[in-house]
Image 1 (cartoon, rainbow, N blue to C red):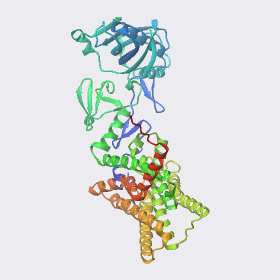
Image 2: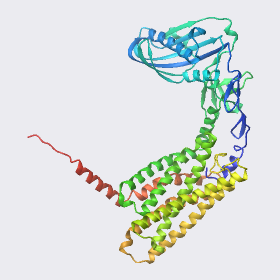
Image 3: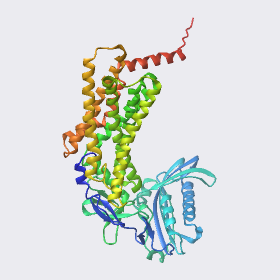
Image 4: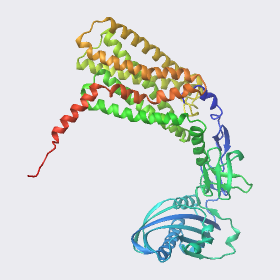
Length: 542
């Protein structure tokens, strides 16, 4: 996200695709639909919303939990009736109008077993001769039925039924007698319905499809393929073979696979960054909580540090979830990238505010200690540290809107902080460079002033704050300086050093602000005072 080289690698991804295409792996791929549907208004809809002679099939697993035990054979009978009723309710027609060609329900327990929990596999196919209206709603409802949780009654017995898409049942049915399983089977043979193609009920029936290229998958069997190079397996419920022999899957399946493969398998850097960021977020939470707990820490430098912790916390939270930006809808994606840009700028400016305050205390000696002036100072710091990043973001958005005649916002077209390399240099690299140089000037000047000034009792606390801020600058500020250098380079060892140092900024803050004698003493006093409220009594026998 922060490397200039990422703009070169994502220029193809930002290629404008037509309304019937989706960008995947640097190319525009045509959006396709299940046979009998067309792509219209960002969805796959039936060519004919009302149709007759429809034939559907489903493989559904069911976990059934009862309040009181029943025989296995009775449960299978009840589940069959419940399933037929649910299908009729979804179709919104009388059950007698549905021709259930095949209904098979199987459980691995003996038919005479009595229990309260049953794991059932099923295969149901049915045919509709009469006209069915609202096909899209019906097919969405049938798909949801295969992966839902129901609280119902089975012949006056309360039950919880969880459904899920299961493997094909034919191999199991052939061997069920050999393993002592219990099966309920019913069938109606109709030569007329066999002329119509069977549509399997799963996500493929209603989702937007994309055709896989030959180098993106390996056929493991007739019912399973493996995506390359992630080795992710897709069952027959998640891919289909078209009439011309092409393999298709839902766009969501292939998009999530590319995100996973690009982020964690080909390049381990995101995984390293993620681990460090999680540690940092936890440490930031603990540090911020410590400052909230002890009022004596909430001086002007302390409050400045709290704002820095808060902005860094939200920034790292956004960075941690940025891999999902690319699959987010357009408007949320634009807002998330803009918010990430805003938060990283806020972190820079609060770093600058912390060093500027120390500069004012020791060099300009212009900071008053009165409560009114303290509030005015903090208000000015907030206006500056939150306002300047906002001006930069607004300026960037306005520039792109004007340059593109209202078509682009400067965010969201690429998986980078901004959509344009020049804008990235102007709105990120330049402010970061200026702030690093300014902070260096503030700290060098302040350090020289402290060294040349005799020790004054009233400045002891300020000297302590300066030492902490100096640690803060070296541990967090300088790491962003390395980020400037790394942004001009390809992936290297420095990239991992920057990822660890920037990712662990919250940990560095925790070590600087919490892991010291003063704070530990505060916690010790708090513990001792709390124990007075909960005295430990003692008793003895005589």
